Length: 436
Image (cartoon, rainbow, N blue to C red; front, side, top):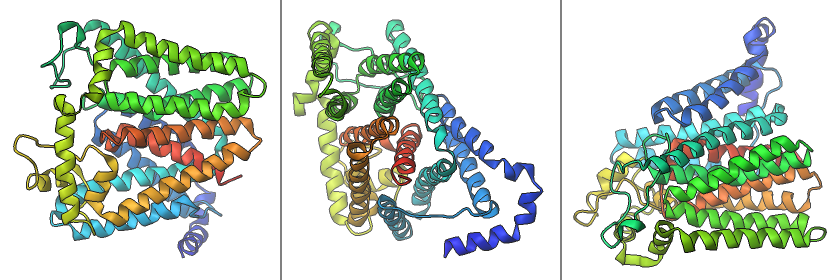
């Protein structure tokens, strides 16, 4: 039905297209707006980033209605994504705080609309994938350098970011936060998690393409980003990074085990040795990592456990349609369930957050989307002979999964800086895997 509407519109507006340089070159404007989203994410407010993304969506809609032979299609995991979006719409109209939920819904619409815009753009411009990933790498690299310098300037905490009640002075970490707004080391850690695996994949892409200088520059960006990630003190990103490394080593075995077994094992040994040495000799890092296992003895852990308990009660009372999307809506309802002194902006678990906000069927749809995406991407990685695109898909897939792992203990996933990178990775996977 939608394609019939598009065909009708395209036929009626064909004269405008034939006589408009803007419409004939609209992909160039879309590309610029896409890249602007990534650059804006590093220093602009959420509202500005969202506005730029809406420009991208608007230009894509104009393109679809005016450019001949443009159609919409929904493939595999996108059916689950469409189901998730429709359930969110139902949850919106079922919310008791509609005006708050509407704000959250508009954010969801912007994120998914940006994803759809990227999919449409990459249909005709798959050669731009390395450029898009390179721009993301430059943005991540700039944040890594800023964060690295912040560590040496010993920036002060803007809020209470670590429990220092049981720490010696040498165990207190200077937690860096870069320039991402709002300033938060967990946000910066999550931003690195969303991009580092894809940057490693991009480096492998340049290596396969025999562009060695670009490969070296990209791997340098990835490595300094890994270092700065540890300086954020974000324990959720530590866990996600370890997950990412395990996945990268597991998938790279397909290419290295048979012919480069010694190099492969040496690389794994080196990474393990460096990690062990860092924990042994950097006191503040060791204390931060060990606090993960402190359970209720660490105030941050205890806070999360209390939020999980209250959020589960919210879900039990609103399991069908949820309370409506958005952190403002969550905070208003959470006040009825929270333990005194433990206010929260979110559920600190993206899957629990989805269940609370939009109900059990939204959670099932989102999990179905992730599961189908992983299945399709892994099938491509393991069976395709196109090595250049295999390493790109593998890197993007690990980025997507790593963000979800981080999301088990945090909800910075819902910040635009991470969302736009996350959906970019999904769109790149879609554009490569589905077109094969």
